[in-house]
Length: 411
Image (cartoon, rainbow, N blue to C red; front, side):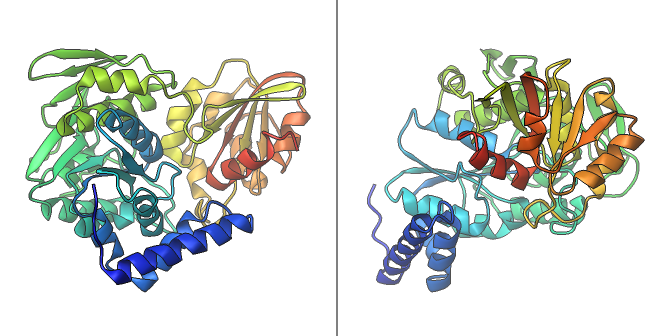
């Protein structure tokens, strides 16, 4: 596929690539974000121009964006080359960098931060939008979850030709997607409901009964087009059954896979073909990776907010020491109140080390959860202080990013 863009766009892309190269050469990171920022500054229409004549899929939600994006990218690669920001750079700068890095790719799978979906969707006119889940996250930056839902709802209503693949077990997502012209509902099972006690439309109580939910105002769980039951995903219209059999652990990853397969199916990838390609994934940017460090085998996991922690805690290996690393940098959110919504009580009886820049805040929360703990700000040193053997190391965003740079080389 060859797309001839205006000279201004080509020049801005070239400037962005040069900036990214300089950033990498100086050791400041991959350079994708700063490169995309420079390109957009020089040509504000660059995203619109680079996204045209491609089949673009946008993926958004509080949790699971990077995982689902990688899954869908792997599935669509059965058809052709795919441009993707699978490194998790999901602001407009990172989205643009993904498109500039693969200018000839006919498909693009782009994870987008929830707050930027309306603007990005307006620019690229996506063929498909995947809505995963909505819950509290970084309240100091993103704001209240109902505000995000209203903005997504307006954005979906403004996309008359887009297929919206949405999690119908999530009240917030169902409300956001219900006004879309073309909907594909996916049932993934309900686990986190603390942010859907009240209806986002009218504020009245949402009634949850078994796998159903409804509000007296009329907002109710739709009948799914796809339904997940354990490892089996069923396409309801023809009773096609797909065995996921993922290498990634946990219910959350099965839910991500279900939404990715439904999106791939809407684009033309047969479900069994997509599932086979998903089974090759065992590592999502270092998540779920096991690293050997002198006397320890360290299993890395990422959890960023209460809903993410609620999914992560059940998949931790029993009787294995746990190191929890928590930072509160800008990318994490400065507000630490979310710690009190995490069910750390599940760690009672286990050996736990509180680590990270905000280990003192975490230590207070663990004390109130009646979880015995040690405190060591440096998560790598926290691992080294434990007896030889396996360790579960769970970190939030910047703590996880820093660990990836330190653990592999044993520093």
